[in-house]
Length: 244
Image (cartoon, rainbow, N blue to C red):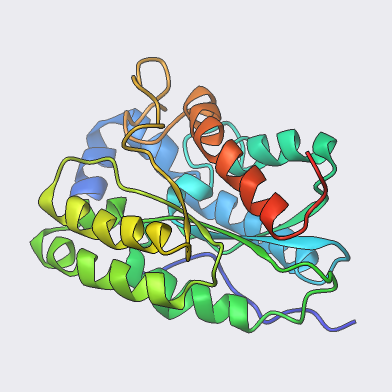
């Protein structure tokens, strides 16, 4: 059986100057940042196997939050924590994780969606479950990227298949509010399912952050899995997955 084309779970960009500078003086930032390469390698190998395995595929698009950066291992982020809850309910999913640390919305458009399209046909009669968590890096990568975020999110909405599960941006910034309007509109039309982190995310991050005080730790990822779980279960039911 042929293997899928190589996709490296990387944007091709180095860390920003501020991250490099802070990492040089703050051990916690450097320690968490050091997870990026081994976690990307682990997801790449797992994805290459999952893409051609029998069973329904779960396609994960996004940034470092879906790579589990900050957790003690790549299998301890919100993706695998949620997978562990869905399995006992009869949802036998194969995780195809195309997320990348440092990714912005244009990276999903230009790299991750094409990588998904290039995969071999699914061996399941059920459609791929698609989840997307993206946008934070656009907000914090400078004014130019922040200004482009709403338009990029609007394009992403049009390119995602119906029933995709997408998170809103909880940050109280104008660009985030504008981007969220596109997601809210798509949800009202019935095109997308929204995990609304403005209301359903963690009420406090105390005790839920990794050593860099930016990425979640395992407790933080558990809280993100809590927000995703009811929406993902509804998406699976609607697309004729096993009853829960």
